[in-house]
Amino acid sequence: MTVTKAAGKLTPVLSNTWDQPNGYTLEAYRSRGGYQALAKALTMDPAEITNQIKASGLRGRGGAGFPTGLKWAFLPPDDGKARYLVVNADESEPGTCKDIPTMMGNPHVLIEGIAITSRAIRCEHAFIYLRGEVVHVYRRLLAAVREAREAGLIGQGLGPNGDFNLEITVHAGAGAYICGEETALLDSLEGRRGHPRLKPPFPAVAGLYARPTVVNNVESIASVPGIIGNGVEWFDAMGTEKSKGHGLFSVSGHVARPGQFEAPFGITMRELIEMAGGIRPGHQLKFWTPGGSSTPIFTEEELDIPLDYDSVGQAGSMLGTRALQVFDETTSVVRVITRWTEFYQHESCGKCTPCREGTYWLKQIMLRLEAGQGKPGDVDLLVDVASNIAGKSFCALGDAAATPILSGIKRFRQEFEDCITMPAREMFPYEASAVFAESEGTR
Ligand SMILES: Cc1cc2nc3c(=O)[nH]c(=O)nc-3n(C[C@H](O)[C@H](O)[C@H](O)COP(=O)(O)O)c2cc1C
Ligand code: SF4
Image (cartoon, rainbow, N blue to C red; front, side, top):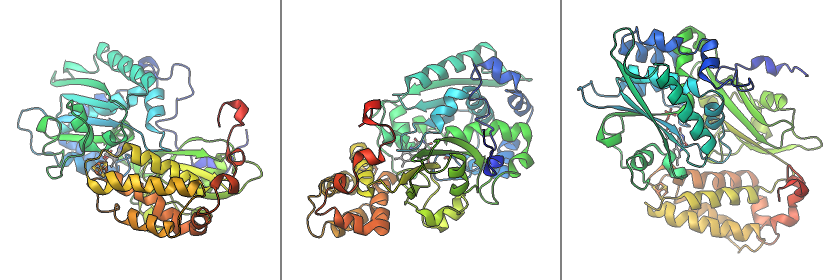
């Protein structure tokens, strides 16, 4: 194996055992110190746990990067009635693929994180809202929760004072991207069709069953045991000043070895591409996404930008879910953005007009451009429609749909203009950008 300079930058914490046989079992997790952080947390005052997570600088790993400890602190004082923790495991954004392997490879780190968080916010019933299609992950989580319950790690009357009570429900959703939006998720969990709720009230005040609720991403909660177990300084030693710690960077697309790279925030795309074996042989980078399909695209110019929330923001995009999709020079930017637009149109929940109607119009225009059957003025029309969705929709799905179109035109306007008369498949044949040959099972 060639060890690259950048490889020394990896910080495998959540992913350190993914390749070990049976590494996902309770026995294996405990053999490497698992659940010791929970034992420690059960001797701590709940407020002290929240303070430590605040001090660590952990920011939500679900996309927006909101400080996790601060979110917990927003809950009103305990009134003795129910309050909930809901783990957002709906992971559906094109390119995003970090939570599913985390839950498959290391489900107990999530369960331990849930138990510690529940202790911190005084919750006795936590939920994991999982994307329903991933049945293998659902089964793994059910088995892990059962193992934890049978081992007396969760349940009733636990802890040194017998005052720790926790039930965990794993809920499989029906597979809608909008159910990853935290309030639509809560509607869905309550048994209704997933539609975003008007905020305020925020979930911290009136969330699940109108009770105070913390909604956090899988990776956010799975990062909690490390911080409580190893201390704030340990976490602080990784990352940048305002983006602390380790995170999963998912590199996909036209690199030699796509995969998950758990690294400190602030690593660069150049380093990650190097660790992924470089751009596939004989090709050059054309564009990439720093945080999934909903984040403005970058090109070679941004390869050395530190991948932390602030630096990526200042460079005009968003770190999002660190879904780093790489596209080489064989790729039609119009075709890629058409696929994403179809996705957002399909996933629009229909609650508000700009997104419901606008994503449909965007899809129609993108499809005719991809086919080389555009109309004069189509590129300006795309900008107009997308600009009337972005910032004018009820939830961030509308922004997500508009963003790739606006950023694609900003970077590659001529390619869009060319598509008015020339089909994308003629300028960029499918075979040239396919990762596998057609005979191997893809188109
Ligand atoms: C359309 C849409 C889909 C989303 N999907 C997810 C998701 O699958 N997982 C997730 O953690 N957050 C998702 N989010 C963000 C959540 O609303 C929320 O911010 C997040 O779960 C908070 O967790 P964190 O603070 O730990 O990052 C989505 C947001 C939107 C608007
Ligand atoms: S922006 Fe789209 S997904 Fe969000 S509420 Fe409006 S229609 Fe639904």
